[in-house]
Image (cartoon, rainbow, N blue to C red):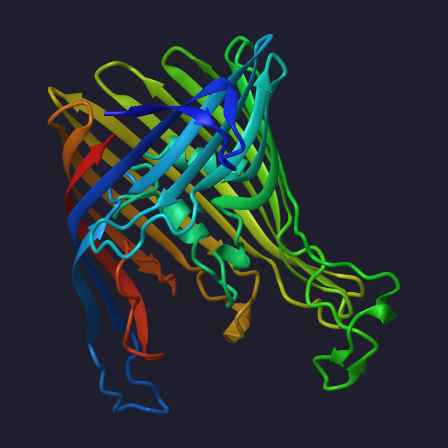
Length: 419
């Protein structure tokens, strides 16, 4: 049950608030048993150079765990709104991730969302940490809401780094949420049209001229007059527009996230994401679909001999369904992704190796005990090909360089309570 408090004093304790503000505490506690299994296979065989090669078979890494957030992410939050009059309002939202399975994560941070906003007939201006526009199509048009073993393979792939270092696809730290953001949301009275724009500030220090920066060694071991590891890294710019009318909803989004750059080398890495999602509720069933394309690229001030680091492209699609059954809900989806590494392999007669790709099938059932409490079960399986190494969760593939990732399977059985 939602609990509403009346704030009668300012947080600083200066005195009574002139305008009362309603503050709501809310949250989700979701705990379940999950099992994961990732299997890799030795695909090698005897050759002319090694006719007696002994195939090593398969290797499997598995884990069973008491997990959380498999139907809805576990969280604890506070939100409030003050009516400023004239149709305007000021609001705040502080939402923290929690881990009820072991209690180790409480309200240490508000990394899920921490925003303050001003809204009115013009729309809403929102400042702080929030979901980026391109994340919403993954969330809204995935029957599993990007959580648990059933979540979209598109989301899994774009949160898996393909270039080393931190972050998701291409080192993108802003794929799901962005800090230090300025967001604008269209007003709700546009005849079904809606939208969002966002710019996230990188907050890096810039020096002019560059010789005033702290000295340091460059990649070749020489002394730079100064060095700045990044200037634009962390910046995000994106937007989303959509139309919802009755059972129909469709939205298109685009985002550009600067993942790394070097002032002296003259390189800038970025991930550009474009996705289109739609859903239609027929009554007996609600259908979902999403198309997505992301490109991880590096720009050079001076292109090196040989062309530099090639782009990596990721394309994917999802089709899904929700079917109400009495007090329950059946959920299912099929998703597929394919990488384009843009790197020909030196095979005979100009042949190239197949690009990594993977597909996923997920099905689940939710039984609502009440409006706030539900039991759920989900099973999922990923098939990897040509070196793709995506999992439903849990341990990574093992076995060394001789083994190729093949399948990943898992299930969630749990209880979710919202308040």
